[in-house]
Length: 87
Image 1: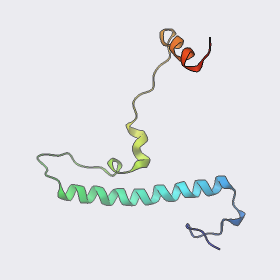
Image 2 (image 1 turned 60 degrees about the vertical axis):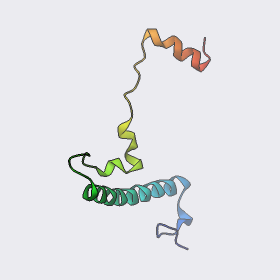
Image 3 (image 1 turned 45 degrees about the horizontal axis):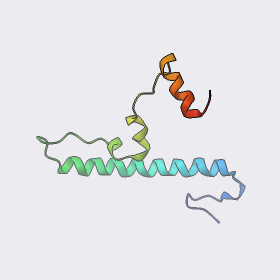
Image 4 (image 1 turned 135 degrees about the horizontal axis):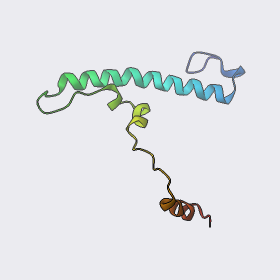
């Protein structure tokens, strides 16, 4: 019996199934976010709003908007040790 992605999952590992599921999700969101950006840009007021990009609507692209990592120094190492319960 074929699964939601069109193949028989019987001979696949859980890891392979998860990879395929994530790949399908990325593909679907890529298409949907392109359409959402197109519709939003067609209906926006160019004088009042910015141009929308597909990544503005795609949850898989949310990682690109993360803040920069905190650099560990001798000053903030004690805070990390306290958080982790180390002495």
